[in-house]
Image (cartoon, rainbow, N blue to C red; front, top):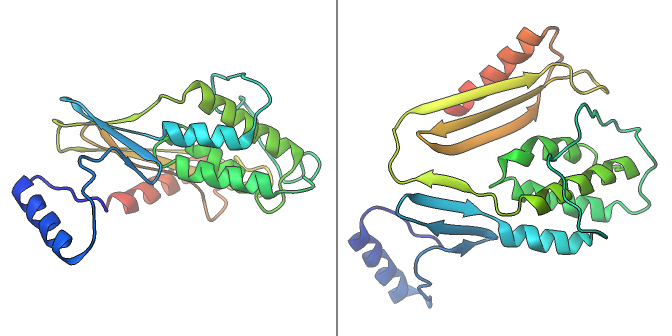
Length: 216
């Protein structure tokens, strides 16, 4: 359980009442919760999943120590028919599922996780090789963290984008957005659009509509 707020006396009161009703231990300031690491400084808070990535790499059992600079090669468009079907897709599904949770603190892999998730029902050798590529990227960027400053403006800044007809199998576009509250990144998402956009402008408008709904 995480108890948070700006009134230390009331937090102490809540913990005392909980302790009266339940057998519980106060672990002190938040440092680790469900695979998410939290650290603080005078400037703000940092959130990361470094240990989670280490465990993920250990389960993946990569046969080398290579790292890559980007999470995906340029101009790659994966299709369901690429490569040969994996004899046992269980490993692929487990690793992609772990990446979905990792994207909670790593917006830089959000797009790749969305792409790889589309093939969990019938992954191929090509899809698996791109999954390993993402893992090598994570190995080289394992210390990256999200920063939430203590003092920041109370202004929302929102950005959206779209890749027009980027899926070669159905020609649907992808919407993506991110939302900053002051200097803190508080929301981000990549999602395939529900209909085919007949122009790049239409794809951009659909992405803006998705962002607007999130902000409201």
